[in-house]
Image (cartoon, rainbow, N blue to C red; front, top):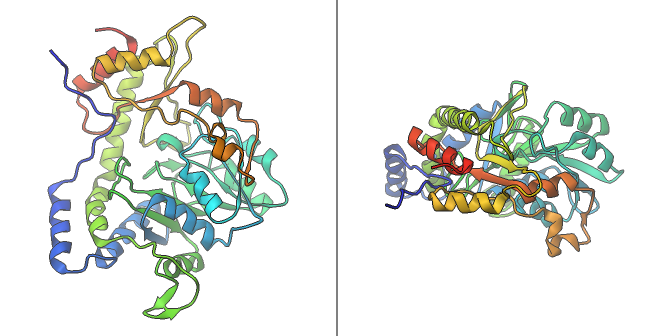
Length: 369
């Protein structure tokens, strides 16, 4: 008998969201309006910042953050080679140069010493990527940025509600979030830029609205970066459940770690003592001894047991020709990033999992029936 499939992610749109979407549709105000304003206000509260500016996608949120900071041609932005390409694409879109520093295998985020070594006279910003739901070292990196006069742009696309040293993702410098379909909060597509800087927030709001301060009052060359009220209506109720859902993700992660912690060749995720992980993904690393089972064998076992999985990410940015040969992508030593890319695999951890699902995930990963 075929076992019921356990998906790597699960999207739940509840009755409250359905009603809010219906209210928007009936209102006739489908574009950016009062629902977006409510979504922004609530998200700012969660991040502990004065401003949250909604935009049309996570990639746009990165681009908008860089533009609002005045970063462009001639500037360098230090970021991770182990990330989704949107991180790099945003830097290149504004005309800046992406300088790739290696990661730490403890959290798969930027290594502070590697960032320090990559700083030049042209460096304008550090863009840490809070990967898999755990923030980068946002104690050391902001100190480094402050000492060198650099901006911080947090790529927090996977870190809604994550914490470091008592502060939320998105509260250091300028934060950037994605609400893509698989994220811990989703609007289908959408993004958010967070900041405590009144001037940056003001610039963001003008830029996203075709450069208009008011109707036909153009102040700058702008863009259509607006979020729709329909999208905000989908996401708004999820913000009220975010703390609970993230806690469920952590409980599921704890159960997976308990069941997998002594498995030979499997390195389970670690949470740094000063951080609160929100487990957008539960990512293990296959580190088997020579001749032992490899990642491909693990993928085969999971497939046979109908357990979904994902490999985020199968290559580093530098392993793609279009980036490796790009004149504005600066190579660096990325040995740890390449090791991660060749060995990580993410297992289901989302709130829809039951105890039986978690047991099957553990059994399939360990190779037992």
